[in-house]
Image 1 (cartoon, one colour):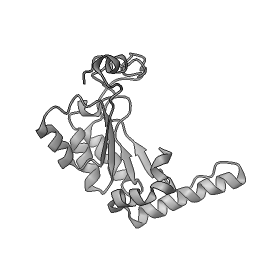
Image 2 (tube, one colour):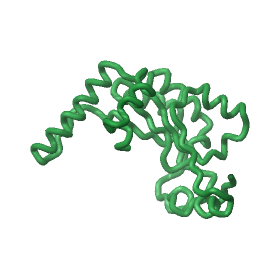
Image 3 (cartoon, rainbow, N blue to C red):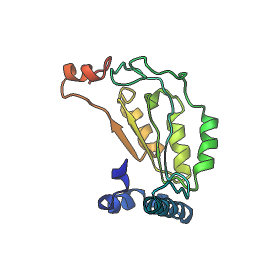
Length: 177
């Protein structure tokens, strides 16, 4: 995620996510950057501030059986489930003053969680930009695509691991282009 905060990308980031900036978030970000510098100088961890980016997993269920993914290949050792919307809201209420970017995905397909778009909307109500990554299988109609746009989702990565069906199926087992 280092590309998100590189100096080269700063103008693009400000243009795209400037609405999310606040005095509290910038102060927190400054403390984190300062602690990184001090840690380097004193050669030991110094932690000031709170995380300015966060990854939250809406679900660890997936509709595919990808060979390199613990969710898809059956090697996930933790319980499966969807994040409860009320728990998510409590989390957002706790982090809203310092998080500048929320990544809403991890080992599962986010759109399997029926409350996913409500999660996006709730974060956006608190001016937190939201990114997600999906295999795209749950975006089949124009209405579904418009619902995603209307939710306020900032960025969506769609994983397409192949230019033809045969190659795609190798990495996204059970998927179709």
